[in-house]
Image 1 (cartoon, rainbow, N blue to C red):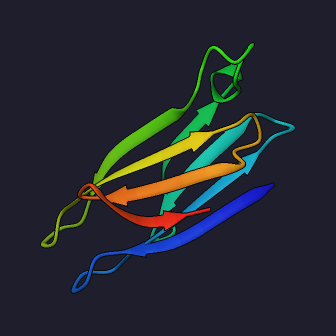
Image 2 (cartoon, one colour):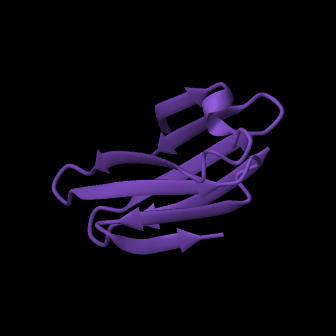
Length: 92
């Protein structure tokens, strides 16, 4: 299981946690303790190197709104980047 955790926002902070299990092929995105996206299946894995990366986009915040893009590469999510309003906020 791979876990990434980071915070988005200045006034209204949003804690985002990403959990990924390579054995089950399941990823979940949790914002402030609430699951917002669960992705299952082979779509998460690069098949014959034809899929270079996967991007999941969503909006968060009530008063301070942010567009978040999470981009991953590799069958085991070994490369991970998160952007908030087109600015990198986390990379691993």
